Image (tube, rainbow, N blue to C red; front, top):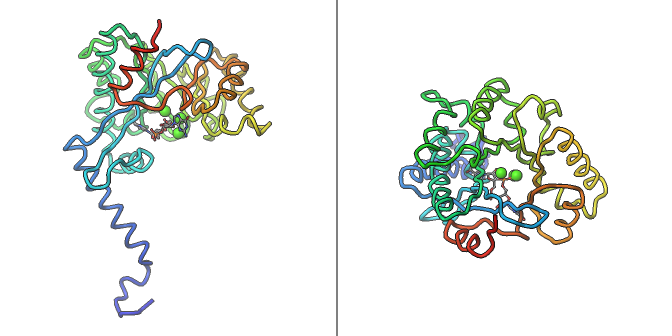
Amino acid sequence: AKRDGRSSYRYFSPEMNVSILEHIQLEQRLRRAVLQGEFFLCYQPLVNLSDRSIIGVEALIRWRDPKFGLISPEQFIPMAEETGLIEPIGEWVIEQALIDLHVWHSMGYMINMAVNVSGRQLINNNQTDFDLVIDKLLKKYDIKPKHLHIEITESMLMDDTEQCLHALKAIRDLGMDIYIDDFGTGYSSLSYLKRFPISVIKIDKSFVDNMLDCQSDANLIKAIVMMGKSLELKLVAEGIETEEQLQFLKSLGCDFGQGYLISHPLPNQELTALLEKSYFP
Ligand code: C2E
Ligand code: CA
Ligand code: CA
Ligand code: CA
C-alpha cells in the first residue's frame, strides 16, 4: 500500500480514485449539458389495453454528451438530484414536453403527457412553488391541466412526506393527475394511497417481467389491481414486451399499458408519424 511513499493514496484503491474522478467529471459535464442544451426527450405511448388506442405518452429524458454519446437517465438523474441540477433540468423537461404537446394538440391528437418528477423538484423550489411554475407553463402553451400528468415514485413520498403532500395537493387542485410510479418496489404503506392525491398506479416492470412464470408475482399483480380498483384508481402496467403479458394484464382488468410490444420511446417526429398512423380518438 505504501508502494511509492505517497501515504495520501493509502486509503484509496486505484479504482476508487478513478471513480471519484469520473464522478467529478460527470458533474462538470452535466453542468455544461444544462448550459449547452444537450438534452432531448423521447415519448413512449400509453395505450388502452382494451383497444390499444393511444391515450397518452410519457416523456423520458435523453442526454447526448459530445464525447461519450448517449448517457442513460439512470446514470445522470441521481447525480442531478444530488447536485440540485434536477431543478433546471426538470423545468426544461416540462417546458419541452408542453411545446411538443401543443403541436400534437394543434394537429388534433388530444393525448395526455406524463412527466417524471423528482422529489427535489417538488419541494426545493425556494423562489416559486412548483404548482405556480407548472400553471404558468400550461398557460404559456395553452394546455389544459387535465392533459398534463405527473409521475412520482413511492420512495419519493417517504422523504419529506408533509412537504410532498402539500405540493402534490396543489398540483391536484390545478386538475392534474398524479401517478405513483414503480409501484410495489418501495416500502410505502398502503395508507399512502389514501393520504396522497393519487389517481393512477403504475405497476412496476419487474412484476410484469415475471408474472407468467412466477405465481407469486402474478398474485401480487392481481392484488394490486384489485386494491387499485377498490380505491377507484386507474392501473397502468409498464414494461409489456409480449402479447401473452398484454393479454394476461387485460384479463386481470388492468386499464392501460406501456412497453416495447406497443412502442419504444420515440423522438418527437417519430411519435408524430406513429400518431398519424394509429391515433384514433
Ligand atoms: P421509469 O419512469 O420507470 O421509465 C420506464 C423505463 O423503462 C424507461 O427507461 C423506458 O425506456 C423503459 N422501458 C419502457 N418499456 C420497456 C420495455 O418494454 N422493456 C424494457 N426493458 N424497458 C422499457 P429510461 O428512459 O432509460 O428511463 C429510466 C428512468 O429514468 C425512468 O424510469 C425514470 O425514473 C428516470 N427518468 C427518465 N426521464 C426522466 C425525467 O425527465 N425526470 C426524472 N426525474 N426522471 C426521469
Ligand atoms: Ca415513469
Ligand atoms: Ca416506472
Ligand atoms: Ca423505473
